[in-house]
Image (cartoon, rainbow, N blue to C red):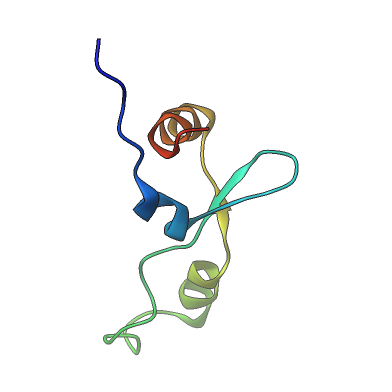
Length: 65
């Protein structure tokens, strides 16, 4: 069976903490059409969030960890 190719572009978008959790940023909120959104919604998008266990597991395979 062939090996899985590593995907280095994922490493640019994900930060791995010392405890092994994978953090990601939100896509929305940095571009245009901001005035229709509330301040609360925009501030929520600035924070990083943790990948769920299943997503992190598949991303680890793609990265090669």
